[in-house]
Amino acid sequence: MTATRVLVLNSGSSSVKYQLLDMTDSSRLAVGLVERIGEEGSRLVHEPLAGPGARGGKRERTGAIADHAQALRAVAEELAADGMGLDSPELAAVGHRVVHGGTRFTAPTVIDDEVLAEIRSLIPLAPLHNPANVTGIEVARELRGDLPQVAVFDTAFHSTMPEHVARYAIDAATAEKYSIRRYGFHGTSHAYVSRAAAALLGKAVEDVNVIVLHLGNGASASAVRGGVCVETSMGLTPLEGLVMGTRSGDLDPAVIFHLARVGGLSVDEIDSLLNKKSGLLGLCGDNDMREVTRRAEAGDDAARLALAAYVHRLKKYIGAYTAVLGRVDAVVFTAGVGENAAAVREAAVSGLEELGLALDLEANAVRSPEPRLISTDYARVAVAVVPTDEELEIATQAYALVTS
Image 1 (cartoon, rainbow, N blue to C red):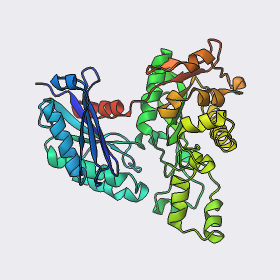
Image 2 (image 1 turned 30 degrees about the vertical axis):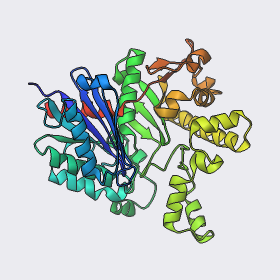
Image 3 (image 1 turned 180 degrees about the vertical axis):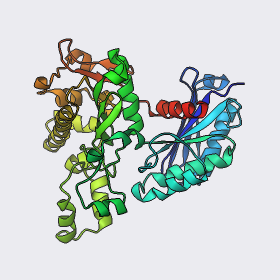
Image 4 (image 1 turned 135 degrees about the vertical axis):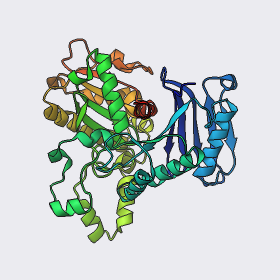
């Protein structure tokens, strides 16, 4: 029996998202989520999409799940109940989302003890994410030690940025000592969407320059020339760049010194302020774009300000990346806000006609799970909506590596 299935694991600090895919046709066999790990109200939602279990629809478990090891064992039990357990000979690999790969990991990598130790050493660069990613890998290796475990890194797609783009203009020795440089994030999404955008345009990826706007609660932009990332908005951490749900994005670094010296805030308090209490939430008290938009349309001044700041930053990056690329074939919106918030797309593109952008308002208003063009026929630069699929990208990269 040929092994063609990949289990994709995205381990967060208190959750595990998973999908089982068949790479013969990129179809999903099962999807699920374990949330509130380590709490009394733990919950597992499992949905088989193929096999006998699919007839019953979603299944849900509640009750305490103490840790990631117990969570993954519960996932394995649910998959086994559908005849798709981790012991299946059809399983080719487990693909793990790993947020930070530093400068070493620039491509999907089969995990061994040395690789795992290196991922662990990168925890100071991603203290909120890499520890959970490591835990997921360790547990999966315990459950199926004979199976290839593949790490796919959020930072890898952006590793092609030229050195003068990746470097901050600070003392070189200090930057080297503390690994301070721009890494970028959401790389699996930017990779998938930039390729899918080329297909939507009917062109080879090597012939297309695109600006990708990944707009979720976290948000990032990238400039992709011929399938290669040459610039992205996030930096050493996911804090830099666009206005986000709870993150400030670009900020004068002296604000941090001012808050410490004048405000008396600690480093941890400033970190929490900029990452968890800023962005849309800081400006108007809501980080859900649907609620911000609703309030803005109802005349709420704080929501209007938040939305204007969000859109203004988008316009700045579209303009900047147009200059970086020289020629732009498409501006592409993706992720939760990018795929669903027609008003945000319209506002972001409005006024950029001199850059060749023009929306078809009827096409922009349509909601669809399919990739689609929303620009006018006469626009020099296409504007598109391409639903992202990070799990498929992880599975594709992992499967290609283990079968090459």
